[in-house]
Length: 232
Image 1 (cartoon, rainbow, N blue to C red):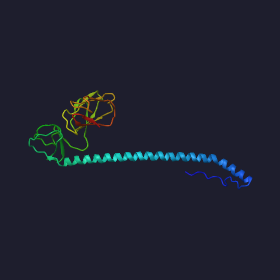
Image 2: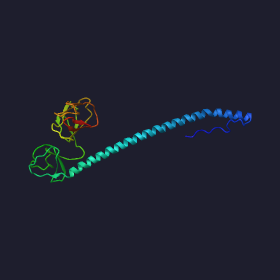
Image 3: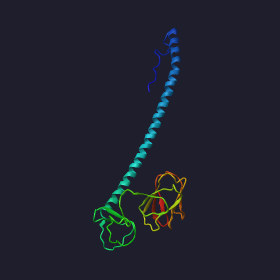
Image 4: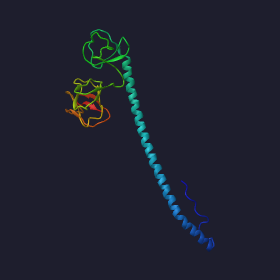
């Protein structure tokens, strides 16, 4: 920002006494203005410095978000590639594990196995008991009472009628996930209990009480027998 120019002429020994006195008086009158200008300049420089720091922090956060997005895209791409290679379902009586992917011969869509049993005689497209449409994004399902989750599910828990228990899968494989979110903001009044169902949660042999309303979703990812389900 501009600083007010000094009066002219400045006091100088070369001036006659009368001119010197006038110049000195003008200079002394100018000094408070100079001090105010200097203080304002300092404030302006400090503000710009703070703004630069904020922009640097924001840029760093954007870079981190971009990296996270890149990693998520890579994960999605890998999953999509796996789905693209899913075999077409056939009535062969083969055993399926929970999480297996198969393509329906009737509509060419990919389905994920929900239960561990023989293939049966029903096309996944119409067998809603044993198969669900596979998607990169979770399909959220509302639950209102005690329920045992299936790997890959996303549960919207409604506790408006009272506390209940969500059991994590008893049999879990590495990278299995279960997502949980508060359906209508009632966890603070009526908690949901996440039952470990034989596996640990965050390396502890304890169930988890969720008591905070409107939390972002909680993602449970199965790691191994030592950690069990890890919350993210």
